[in-house]
Amino acid sequence: MVPVRRHTFVLLGIGIVSVAVIGGLIALAFVLPPILKRSVENQLSEHFASDVQVQDVQVSVFPRISLVASGVSLRQNGRTDVPPLIQIAKLTLTANISGILLKPRRLAAVHLDGLQIHIPPRPQVRQEKKPPSGRKEPSSVVIGEVTSTDATIEMAPNKPGKLPLTLQIHSLVMHSFSFENPVPFEAMLTNPKPFGEIATEGKFGPWETADPGDTPVSGAFHFSHADMATIRGLSGFLDSKGQYTGTLREIHVEGDTDIPDFALISSGKPVHLTTHYMALVDGTNGDTELKSVHAHFLNSTVDASGLVAGAVGMKGRRVTLDATINDARVEDMIYLVANIDKPTMTGPVTMQSKIDIPPGDGTVLDRLLLDGQFGVQGAHFTDSGTQGKIDALSRGGQGQPKNEDIENVLSNLRGHIAVKDGRATFSTLTFKVTGASVDLSGSYDLKGQQLDFHGNLLLDGKLSQMTTGAKSFFLKLADPFFKKSGGGTSLPIKITGSRSHPSFGLDLHRKSDHP
Image (cartoon, rainbow, N blue to C red; front, top):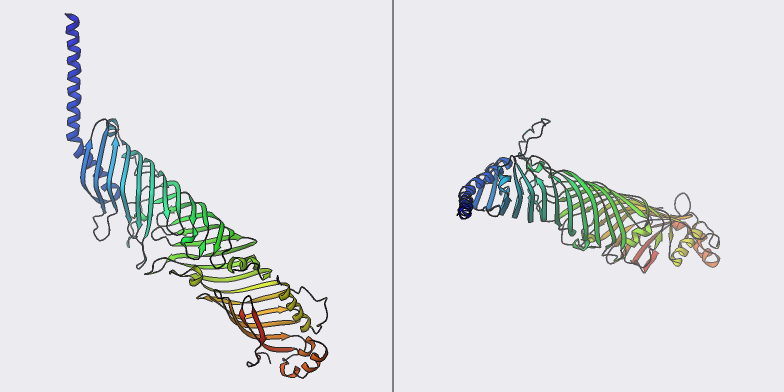
């Protein structure tokens, strides 16, 4: 009888414990929902200084605590004149009972579906930040992992008329999350132009309640296989790596780009383009101040600084640059821009220019505005026929038309260039060789490749000295008519036709500008 009685007592004990556990779970099922709902609302309200609304909460306690909150909305300081600071379609929280009872509370994980964050403009009256006390406030809640998929962050611009910046975050993971400390994170974002994926990891926070745009952020990024063709007039695939630090509103970025197959559609010839850059990014609208850009392709380098910014009332961004070329080759520039098999000229080139590319639907070449001074010292023409004419011009200008020792003459070219609507206009364009020079002004159609130049050919010698025999005798009659002051000859000339078939001739209906 004793074993039976003992067995009965064991079963009875198990039954009592089971009933107690079941009763406890049932009690938790009734008690926890309002407690957890209030706890979630209080935490969000306190740390985001917002009025919190939750449409629905569902809680389960077995096998572990799970809370699902739907329709979560946070309005900072109760404002209704701007979109909610944070909206979450569904918030899923999981925790162990022991973690709920600890201080700070420890949650296993939080997952956010349909997360939307709207960063408001900078407050007109800024609150002074409290100086750091030297002591970190203890965390009230620690979350093992916070995850989100397909989140959106929209930054409201500070300047009226500017469009907001919208970031699409495909995936976001935060580790050991707390409101009081910087949080390690990894994220994947999409960049619209050039289109590509950005992988980034770093630290975010702590959240700045008074002005969310001042929330600190830092880390490293990798922008891979970005399609340059999403910018009309360009092609190639970009790879970029770098680091950043600052706040959501002011992010300092330093990085490198590598485009093995960069090309302008106007030429269709790819070059390997690399850059190193330092920039300041306004996270509220994506405006980027380019502190310095050092670009290299073929045997040439270009240094630039400027701004990539949204235009008031317009979709897209305006690019304004100050560009300097000191260590470059003219053949590289021709290869990059012109659709020709072989550059027409070689030699070192220098240039100072201002570049403006406003937003619009046209290609980069259609929208390009450029104003600059350039020079090519010691230029040599790659076509033997063209170089032969330059050599003959130099011989004639020196009065030695038969001197075959004068060959492979180097030329110096300099002038002012302005580009607008796909047309390059040149003024004060000078071309010099030993014994002769040309002063020109005119234009070149970058698409149709048509030439229209007028100016003067200036010779050190007389017109009759450019040739020999009977031609020289008859040209002596014309010497007085084309004599320039100080000696030598001035001939009005014109260059028309196409780049591949130029036409050179005297412009006799126009008087020379060098009497």
